[in-house]
Length: 300
Image (cartoon, rainbow, N blue to C red; front, side, top):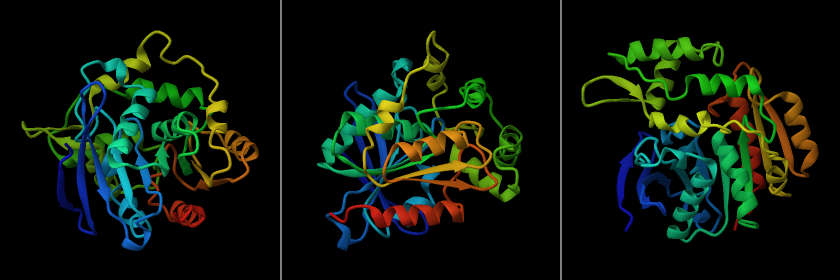
């Protein structure tokens, strides 16, 4: 049975939801109840990027929950979700199966998604494998065409070991690695982002908050093989669709975003200035675009 514990993030409450995957991994999500008036509305699922967790939505999720129920997923191997015994299960299709197990447990039929990078790929796969259930999507700096340079950059650093003695040391190291992505960030911004992406170990060291083995499928033979994702993308059909792109992104090219808009009838493309891969969706431009997208979602 799932366990629910009340938490408080300083702005509003969420509950912790735990469930089991088909292969026995204990998984975690944060659930924001949303207003009573929107009880019958399809909820929004927030799906993080490759090395991210539920804290990636610590600002956006309470905002969304003013409008409707919001569920923030932690994929296996991240945050409070357990690490997988088999590292080759760290793949998008497994993440889809894990999310579907939660939807089944909660009795959720229809839903919208906001997915960053990997989370956006999972969204597209859910549209393709669960026809008629996805009612809207935000794809944050991801699409069916991804830039090789950005993928190589991610593959080079993901899963790297290492730790830092203090949060300030960790923030400085994180800034050195990601300075080109958020060139206008100051020290407080880097501390905020570092606390979203890192954790304190029992030994008092600061480390990234994910299983380093999530990199295994990316580095396996064929792990970077080319697949045609356009049919999966087109499975989004005519639902309200927002495509966010960081102006400096090395993952989603502007030309790819424009092709995505041309391919689907309700797709809207918004570029977030001054950031790379990926926008945090705290930015005013991103929030304004998400507001407009929310207004287009079905009310029931």
